[in-house]
Length: 148
Image (cartoon, rainbow, N blue to C red; front, side, top):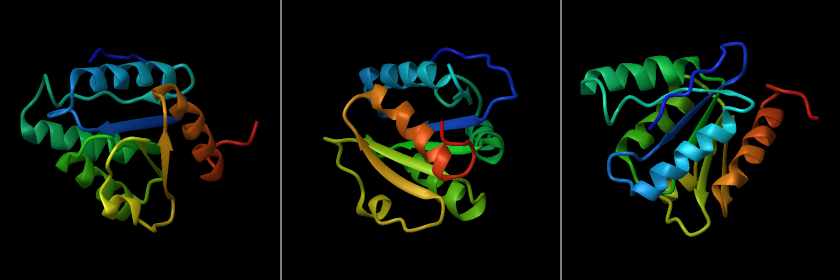
């Protein structure tokens, strides 16, 4: 995954998803999504597959990315223990607005579908390019931006 260097005065979106066991085409779609989001928002970067120890990944993802983001975007197309942990932490500990999404063909845990917490929503998408408008709408309903 390539790095995106973005200014820090924009809303921060942390994109979380399965990486360890996800197929390459999915990972490529996530890179494409982050490039699309980076046109408007600051996106945080993964370190997990190429850099750092497991402790570094935990500190980066939970205590930097989740702690500092304005919105957590959870891509739930592929099961991931780390993503589940991030979802719980974002909702229960950090009280962050969370938009969870999954492709229309993805099988998603009933637990994720059943979350009924303030600031959490779940949406389906057909194409990765459908996600930025969902993010924009979530930011509006979370009162982080005004409707345009």
